[in-house]
Amino acid sequence: MGSLIRLFRDEDFAAICLLEIMEKGATYPSSVFIRQASVLYPTTFLVAEKNGDLTGYCIGALREGIPSEAWILRLRVSLPHRRRRIGSDLVGTLLKIFLQKKVSVVYLSVAPENGAARNLYMKFGFEDITFKKGYFGEGEDRIIMAVHLSPSRNMTSER
Ligand SMILES: CC(C)(COP(=O)(O)OP(=O)(O)OC[C@H]1O[C@@H](n2cnc3c(N)ncnc32)[C@H](O)[C@@H]1OP(=O)(O)O)[C@@H](O)C(=O)NCCC(=O)NCCS
View: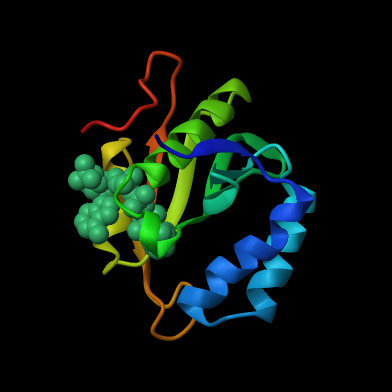
């Protein structure tokens, strides 16, 4: 059975921070962002849960002042649970929520070498828009990807 996808609850905070620490080693900056995102984006901050354990999370945000545009800000699945479609379920659920909110285009940034994430996003129809050198500072290049949403679009990834 797959993971349950649901909205973030306050008690998820520690598990999400742990997920970040285990892989990235970052503590404080990530925790600050996660805490603030839970306040700012309560209806587009999703978690995946299996047997009471947090298996992944995904943060989306509507663009302030331009609500027809949204961004996927974070996506992470815990290492032992990867390749079980949890990432796809999180993104698919988020895109459905965006559509309900009348979002028409969704953006994200992804590292050029992150083939796993790029493959996942392409299965949802995301395409490369532009390459940004040093987008997150020196050595942190990113590709901006985007997908146009419409009610007729199937929000499950193409296998
Ligand atoms: C990217 C990530 C979220 C994928 O989550 P996941 O639950 O393992 O992904 P899924 O099982 O839903 O995979 C969906 C598709 O993505 C692609 N994919 C996922 N992992 C992949 C990998 N390691 N290598 C190549 N393609 C991969 C495949 O096309 C896959 O479909 P398939 O299994 O039918 O071949 C996960 O690897 C992760 O958390 N990575 C670290 C954080 C990160 O990079 N986040 C994205 C930042 S932009």
